[in-house]
Image (cartoon, rainbow, N blue to C red; front, side):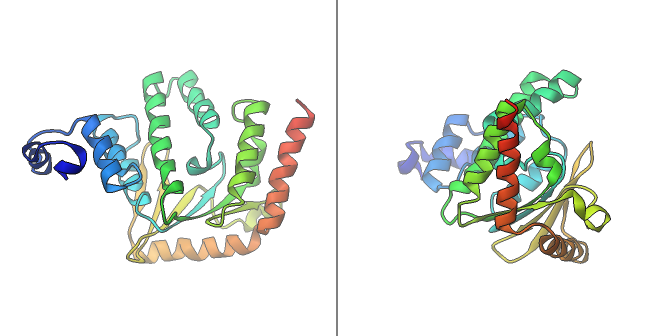
Length: 245
């Protein structure tokens, strides 16, 4: 390891034994040498900063390892699928409302960009996102920024590992979820769930609970628009924004 990243064995040993905290430079070099996709940097930021809600750092560690990530979202485009512009606009709202400082907002965007590296790893995880129609209609960052975000979704939908579906308003009371949920399939085939309140996040390990969520997800997947129809809905929403620009 020392030969790969040009650090002494003594330094590496002290980090491994928690005798000294690793430097950011060391973390970045270790990430590159071990081909982690940024997992160590993500963990470092979680330890060094408090911009993330309680429970979320534990989730992101599992997300980075997952082979399949299934998401149900209502308000916004899921983080892994966001453009930088969209993410910054979303965080700017938190700053204006006083629920986050600018430094915290910047840190959250940095963490998001690290998380998004999982899309580029080999093999990349399967991403299956079911978006409520409202995600496409809420113009985060204004019309121009939202147009580019929707175009980004169209491009992502062309990837073999990305499945996007839209849950239309017409599902009404038949939508099985009341809030955003994530289901992670781990390399061991273990299934984990994640959801949030306004104050904290919860990584759900109880097999019975997560299995129930998975059944609801399967039902939603069937009830939502098909991949082709969903892509058409995304494209339609983008063109409507462009026509009103």
